[in-house]
Length: 184
Image (cartoon, rainbow, N blue to C red; front, side, top):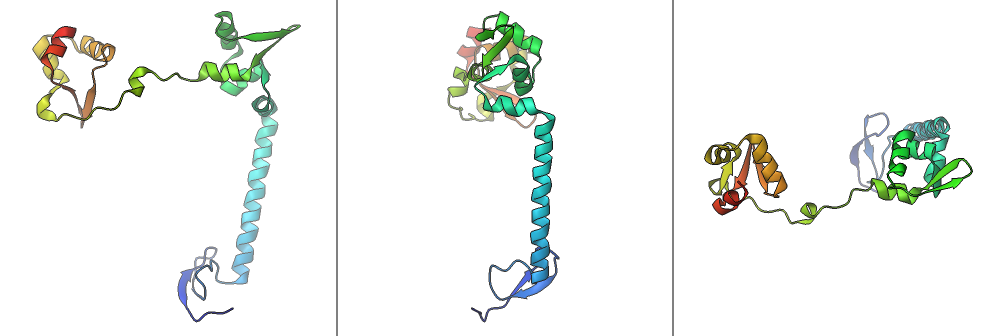
């Protein structure tokens, strides 16, 4: 089926301008279409070969990803930590193990659970809106007003969960006289 429309396009393969007769045409000729197909096929074969090479380099890692129980060595490869570190975690009682003769195995789900970061209460709190510059102190103003060192101030801010606002190169804290007097 032919159409009477003529659209100026640029060939995806040779980058030359051509007149297309449909809106879906990508290549200027059958020759460019064939060459683009061959280039895509060649690229996918190279990527598959590279993937197979990576698997061949680290066969234990691919095996460990599919198993429910893994050895200490496989756990080290999978999580990027040393065997000694895993043994220290086990000796502290933070991971359960199973022994088969001299072989030690770990449940992969236990390792996943050990390395997940629990959500803290501070992460679950909604973000507070910036009250505006006139309603805030800079860190320097708080230090001067209450005669406190920068390290102690940052420690108090962090320990008590006081919200800091970064605007440009300055850090601001909302003004609340009673709140600071209580902490300092």
